[in-house]
Length: 405
Image 1 (cartoon, rainbow, N blue to C red):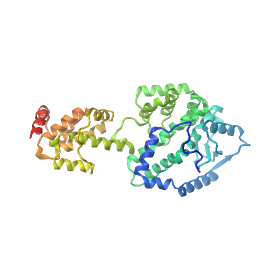
Image 2 (image 1 turned 30 degrees about the vertical axis):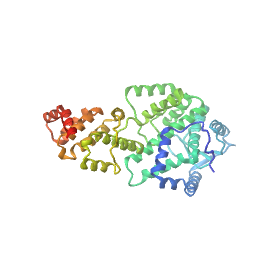
Image 3 (image 1 turned 90 degrees about the horizontal axis):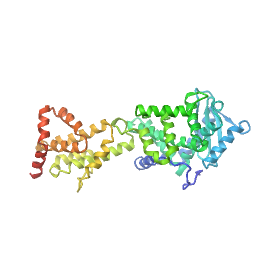
Image 4 (image 1 turned 120 degrees about the vertical axis):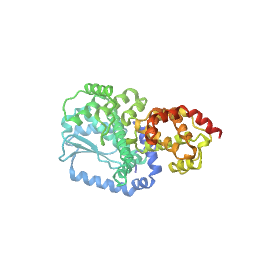
């Protein structure tokens, strides 16, 4: 049985990315979802975790570690949890770390290295708040967020995995760490302690200044636009800044935090959600170009259906400013991609001569892609600069003529 009722009001809310990814996986990866959410698989996973804990970690008792368990009880109370909690010390291992060994309905936290000797009382509560927040996150809504993490991990291990699978798993975990950092702040009640705890665990230092670290993070953001690329934890300064923003602004900081974690969309770093958005935008761009009814020949429509087999031109064209605004927020690689999509349709029906190229050029300008489209078209079509300039100058005339034929 789930330790949280389905309608439980969480003291912390999953981020929009979590909800969007769960919806995507339940829709498009329903077989995997059914498998990983089955009682059989969950039982097998729990048994494996129990055995691993018994073999590789020392189970600390309440009698020998009263202060530790007092902190654990405080963390559970702050997060509204009333389930048994056990803390372990990993045997061996380099550096410091803490992790949740997830078993449904039970909290098991594993410490690695001299964590207890390094953190002060508030920092320890913050650390336990972070790990207990992992449990809270995984238990909520019939454990769907844990199922999503398992599905993504399985997809990345598949030999047929593509970059969007790995990127989705990476981002999902990064957003999860951001969620759990909020658990650290809620339990510890002190931003400085939550940040100092994080820095101590990452660096191994016994004395750190959260104020100095947050100032360092601000300096980094003034100098460049960082984007996290680590697999298990976001870069520490991004996490610290995300927590600082959330502590000051609450949910109003969501858009800025998303920009920090994801950066502008690029062709090389699309996740599954981004890939779906680009696919939708591609359909809309094609539809916008084919708003010219004379351009809807058998050849161009057949080409459109190579992209989308159910493609049908819309009765009314979408307002171009909406398309342009979305494209302008993307990195150059995706802007170039849309230029190549337009160029595809400019050359697929040779019987229309130069009119499709004129239409693609005009549309690229409206989308804010004119400066990229020109050089791409010139290069790919083997045109001389003067030839393209002549076409550009006569584009309006060519379109007017094509519309009257």
